Amino acid sequence: MGGPRFTFRSSGLGRGALGPRASLPRGGAARVVRAVLYAALLIATQGLLSRLADAAGVAAPDLFLLTAMALAWRLGPAPALAAAYGVGLGQDLLGGGVLGLHAAGLAGAVLLALLIRRYVADSGPLQVILSVVGAVVGEWLTFGLLAYWLRSDLITVRVLLTTVPGLLLGTLLAYPLWEWAVRWGMGPRPGPQEQLA
Image (cartoon, rainbow, N blue to C red):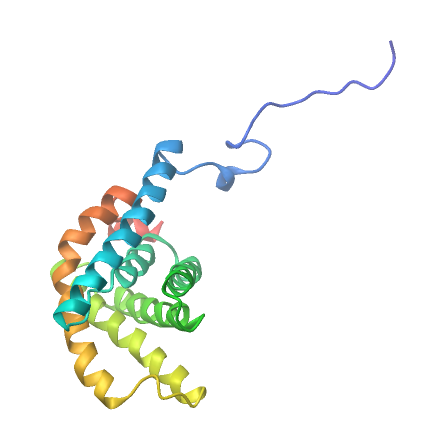
């Protein structure tokens, strides 16, 4: 009769006990499924483009770089860097190369893309072109710094002259179509007013 009385809340993962940030993204489970399907599409498409580009003797567009940039446009600076590092680490694990090289490269790419986002107004195509060029430059600067630091001959002048221009052009050309896939998988890119909130 006079014992303690307990009340349980059945708030689940919403705005209850775990706080407002613990809920699923808008769209709930469907959005999570779209993100997983987007990741599968990213892996399959990048693999197919890499095979086709190797056969043609050119560099494939870097869809992992475009994914990291898409995350940078949708997240704040610190989460964007962590997400880009995670995307690059996934690329390293799938590619079987030097573990952490693409992870650091994509983090460097997003760092430059964030700098461009900060200083160039959301002006549509100009910001996109500058962001893609800046991200490719940031990625390859990071690769170069890591190769120098590790005393590796992974990045040579010949590689820079033959790979980077084709990669940049391919990534710029792939951006409009891949942006459609990003919007489907991650949702629309927030406008400048939404990013200020």
